[in-house]
Image 1: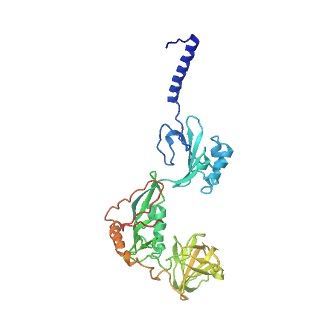
Image 2: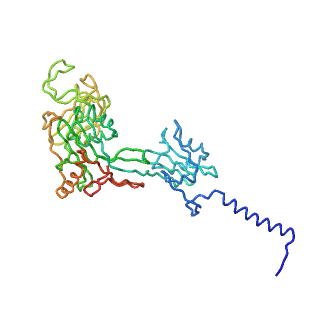
Image 3: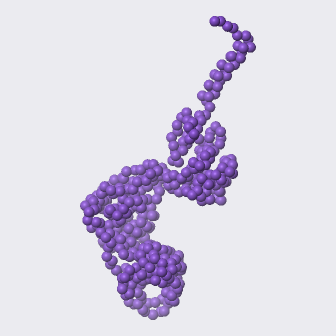
Length: 439
């Protein structure tokens, strides 16, 4: 069968063919569609960045929240309408309140290269958490945790001034000083450290994308204080919660804390004869004075019930706590009181602040302790330990001590713990084969 085309019909056919060819060429160079949750698929994949977003498919603008800049200001600058901003704010709650944006915090805006429209906003809440706002689908807004790399590291040093200064000067995170003082709170009064005392500890170091973040738990530690070595090993003894024990498996937790302040110094000790700076005469001082700045938190040395909380003549603002049938503690000259009579308090709970009320010449805490109603010296008092490692876990604990002790003695290099990636967290492992409880 033969047929022929007239000039106009032939021209129309050629135009259709040419148009199809042109469409194929422009389709090859046009931007690929985004991959959406509705089932459409992009023509290529891009690896996710630290916020779980395919940064290679977008122009990513790196910014920091400006002073007095609001969530609305940030998005309005990128042309996001007000209703969408309201929808995003609602979607973020209750995990994150957009009014909590902080000046200086980093955020990123992911802009579609071809449409020049913002697609996502990722805001860094803190070192570990971030929130991704989905500008096209506000309901998909979510808070996530950045991948944390974990390894075991050591810190060691000799005390010249305070424990805090010594830890920081030897490259340790300031938080390690606080945690070390908490580990040995029942054995060592860190206000009485002296030059030449030393420490060595093994802890969980953490980092996010190469940047160090707040460290994890102390795994083991040794403090040499006044010629004696004090050891601590973190171990989960079947209770579901890790505790610290000495080399013999005795718990480091005692009935009472050694001191009611974390960092300070003793300005006047327990004595039968002290010259009173106000009364100008010698008289007994049945307590320990800790010099500290006004407002320093004062903590209860043990669990108990508040017997008295109020002003008491020369004692000034005063708190008295009964811990059990044996021990009662007192806290004098407080600037303010945080508890009331009859309150039940826990060990380490803040009960007030250092001040100079009553008969006092300057900010300090006068700490008193009574045993069966008789004043005792809290610095020299020896208290019985809590429960030791249970018998069925003794061998596992001994294995832990044998493995960690060389690291504390500085004779070996501490091995790195397995690093972790992804948003799920796992407790660090002890050397007894079981997971240490997360802090």
